[in-house]
Image (cartoon, rainbow, N blue to C red; front, side):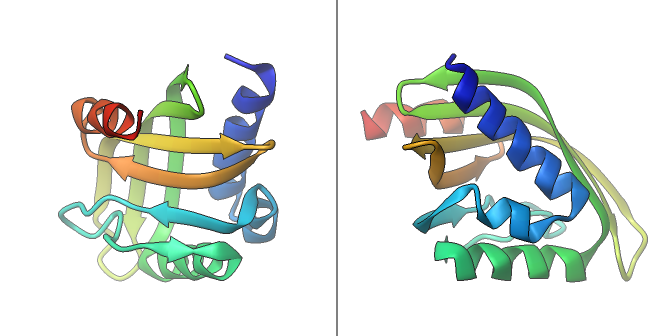
Length: 135
């Protein structure tokens, strides 16, 4: 894996975990697209978020929903223009206090040193299938 892509992915998760939305937006192309997975309990909300405004909207929604949210990369693999990341997600609901722990698979498309697209999946199989469909 290129050192640049690995570092970009690490910076993304550091920004998410540090609550630094402005740092996070700088990592994305202005016309990027984010597609979170739909999970029971609303950890990740289904839908599409486009551009810097969409990324900020998604971050604001997460801040309203979760008292705390951390996403730790466990395995990072480069697959052509994509980077596939297995993550451990831990969140605590703001209103309920309920803790959620899960594994997600994030597929990042990197172009010119920035994220062009990102998608979250609930299984490695789904993420790998998405890469195959894009090829």
